[in-house]
Length: 371
Ligand SMILES: [Zn+2]
Image 1 (cartoon, helix red, strand yellow):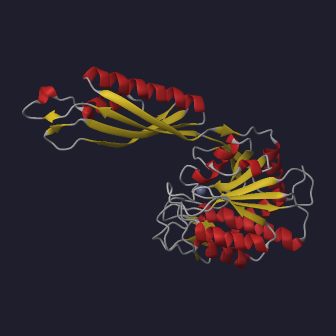
Image 2: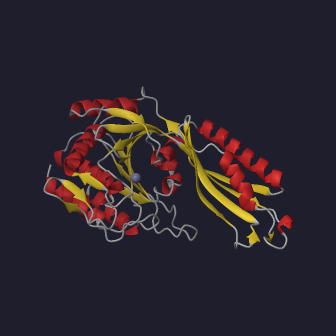
Image 3: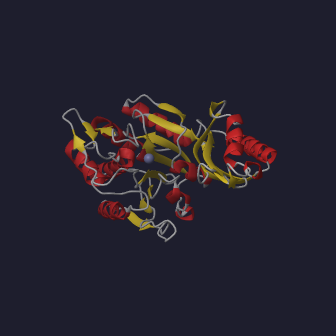
C-alpha cells in the first residue's frame, strides 16, 4: 500500500469544507472518485430543501462482486462538526495527523471515508474476489443522523453494515448504542410587577427551579439525564411568566428512557400545579437504541477479520449515536467500527497513519470475507 497516497487522499478530503447541510463539494469529489473505481453512484435528494437549508443528499454506491452472498453495506458520514472551515491536515514525522489547531481535523469522519475508498482501490488493483458492496456516505450525521434517517432503504439490499465512525483502537467496534431523547419543558406562570404586586404573579422560574431540584440528574442506574439550558424571565423587577428548560435523557434501554421521561414530566407537572403555573412538554427521540447480538454473522465476520489481521478484537456498547441507529430501525444489523479518529469534536482531533493502514487492511478482509 502506498502510505503517501493514503495520506494524500485523507488530506484532499479534509481540505474541503463540509459542515452539516453543506456537504455538496465533498459529495461531488467522492462521486468522481467512486465512479473512477467502477462504483455506480446515486445521490438521493434527502435534506436538499429549504427547511434544512441543506445542499446535499446521501450518496449511495454499488459495486458488484464475484463472491456469493448478499451485499455488505459500508458507511461513513460526509459532514463534520464546527469549527471546520479551512481545515488543513498536517502529518508529523511520527505519523500523527492533526489540524493546525484552529479547526477540527475532520477525521470524524474523513478517516472512515478514506479507508473505504482505499480498500476498494486495493481490491480493484489486486483483482481480488470480493462481495457485492453497497456504500452509503451520509449527510448531516452530526445532526442526530438527519441524512441516514431519510435514506432510500428500499433500494438497499444489504442486511449487514459496517459503519466506520468510532473512536478507539483498530479492532474496536460498537454493537449497541442508546436512545437519546431530547426534551423541552415550558413552564407558564403569570407576570406581575415584582415590587408593587408580587402576590398577583406566579413565577415560572421558581416553579421550574423546584422541579429541577427534584429531578434525578447525571449518571443514574442505566441511564443519564441532563438539563442543559434554562431560559426565562424578562427583567429583575418582573415576576417571570415563562421559563423554558431543555435537556436530554439517554440509555441503551429505550424503555428506561421513556420511564425516566415520565418521571421528569410528572415532577414538572406537580411543581407547576402546586404554584398555580402550567407546564407544556415537547420531546423527541433523536436516535433509537439498538443492540446487535454477538452471535450474528456481521459480528463473527468482524472477529475473524481482526484475527486474520492480527488485531485484538474488542466489541462493546457506546453512549454515542451514529447512522447505525437508523440502519437498525430499517432491519440492517451493523457494527460501528473504529477507524482512527481520536479526540473528536475538538481542535485536538487527530488520526494516526499506521492505524488508517490497519483499518484499510481490516476493511479489505471484511469486503472479501466469504460467509
Ligand atoms: Zn462521526
